[in-house]
Structure formats: C-alpha cells, structure tokens
Image (cartoon, rainbow, N blue to C red; front, top):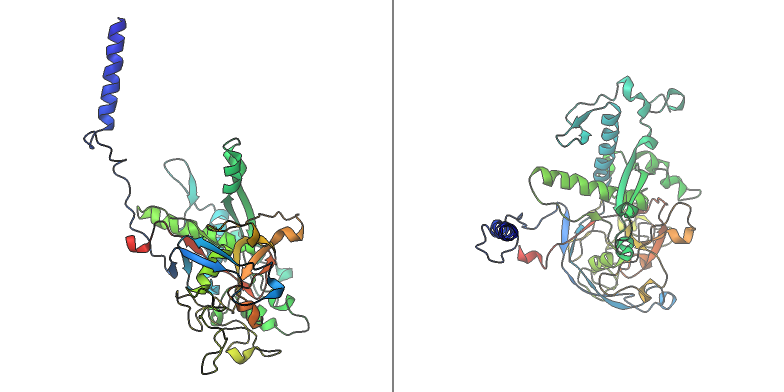
Length: 413
C-alpha cells in the first residue's frame, strides 16, 4: 500500500510536469500566449529619448548657486505633451466629472457579471430635469437671473499609491496603508485673474477665459497642484478604459513631470543653452521676441500677448515642444527644497513630499518651471527654479503631462 502511494505521487507529479510543458516541448520558453506590445503613440505627445543632462544654471548666477547647483544626471525616456494642457482639453475633464455626477444622481448604473456596478454612459442626461436641480445655484444666488451650474459641486476623487512608503515598509503592513485618496474641486478658479493683481482691472478674463471659445486653445490656469494630479489620474483611467475595450494592454500612468524631466525636455538637446531655442538671447536676428514673457517694466504686449497666448504659439524647441519658456509656468511633481540638488540621486532624480492640508506652508512648496507671461526673462530660462504652494491656484501657472516610455528606444518597435 505504501509503495502504491509513492507510485501514485510520482504519476501525479509527472502528469503535472507534462501539462506545464505542453506546447513548449519541454523547453524553457517563458509563458506562452502573452499579450503583444508594439509600443504606443499618444495623441498630442512628443517622445523624449533617454539621455544624460547637465542641470543647473546655464550661466553664472551667484545668488542662486546653492538653489541651482550644477549636477549631471540621467533620465529615462518619456512622452510629454507638446503644449500645455489647454482650456478645451481640461474642459473635457470637467464635463466628464459633471456628467458622471449627474448619472450617479439619476442612478444610471449597470451591474456587470462579476457583481461590480458602473455608470451607464449611454443614457441621456436632461439638465433641465428637477432631479438635477441641486447641481445649479438656487434662485436667491443667481446673478442676472441666469441658471448656472454650481461649480463647487464638481468634486472628483483620485488615488495614488505611496510606492516609496511601501518600499521602505518591506511588506510589513497592509497594502491599504499605501493607497491614498483625495477629493478635489476640479473647476478652475477663475477669480485668480482678480486675486493675483491689486488695483488692476482683469474682470473680463475672469468672466471669459475658461469658458469662452476664443480661449479654447489657450493654456488652462487657475488649477492648483492637486487639481493637476486629479486630471492626470482621470486621463489615465479614461485612456486605459478605451484600450481595455479594444483588448489592448494598459500603459504607464499619465502624471506630472519631475523637475528634472521637465528641464531635460525644455532644453531640447541644447545642453548648456539658457533658453529652449538654444540661444543666449530672447530675440532673434530680426529683433522678434521668441517667447511670451514681460520684456520690460509695464511692457506686456511687445511679445505678441498681453496675457497668455495660444498653447502652440512661437516656434517649438528641438524636441517639438511649445512654450517651454514663458506663457504659463508649469507644475512638476517635485517638492521644492533650496538644496535639493545636493542630495538627490543622479538617476531619474525625484524628490517628493505629499503634504497634508494642515502641514506648515513650507512643506507644501512644489517646483514650477518655465516662467510665465508676467515674468521677466530670468524666470523663463531652462535652469531657473521657482515654486508655488500646492494648494494655490494662479493666473500664470498651468501644466502638461508625461508618460514614462516602456522600453529601450522607440526605434525598437
């Protein structure tokens, strides 16, 4: 009986091994029937190859020696939006959040076979119905008797994973500890055009800049750091949902660029040049200004734009990226420390700190880059560092997204 049990065990093991080797002739072939990967070509994005970058000031800058300490680093390849996110692109996000809330209130849901519930986007929405009246301002809050949607109701929950915290935990804690969630009001703060300037008439920009078709292709502003992250999270899920429906493999997440990635992309391969176009001056040989900034005291329109300009205005840099200098400053994912270059790694440098609402202001500083329409030429240099508080929205700060490239080189596909 004992020998029979041993024989039975041998037969089971042999049959199991035979099943595992089926189709591979007993050879080490890896797992078969894996999905194919032919690379991606995200709409409106530019590929930036892996490479080495010398960060820091491109010229002598005594006052900022410790803030912009020179350093050689290496950056993994990535895709980056060729322009800043525009009003019309961000409006797609706003409209999606608006409609998702309306579908939820109307209980437009579908239950899938695995028991999960999702919104039924095929059902029509009637924003004149009484069931959605709470999405609009009540009558006593209406201006000029206009029926307008209450923008404060447009709230979106996004998630992120604390990878660094999980790495240092060594699997000692529940995974839930590292899944972070945050709710944000995602409608741009249009009042920044009034709030940012004292004794200055900018109310027409407040009334028109985000919603009027005249500004559709202009960079979105009035978006704080968390709103920008919420947009990236939505964009990731929006694209991956489409790819999954097509039977395609999901990709890396859309996200804000790190400070080093932003500078690498802005330089466009011009290693030590102070500006994205590779030169040392803000005018070309004909005297034309090459970016949207403040050329002189009280002189805003000489460069062609009194405020912002279209996101694809002026010539792109050698990577094909528009307005990496001027127009609007841009959020990065990096936390701002004056001496950050002194202790960051030289491989994909990335310094992050997720500050809470009740943390000190100094902990909430996030790096912005590129300078804006209201800044002097110094701030539009590729090596100049500056910051804003993560919960502050400004009329001169926007953003663009990046997507990490998966592979050695785009030429491999």
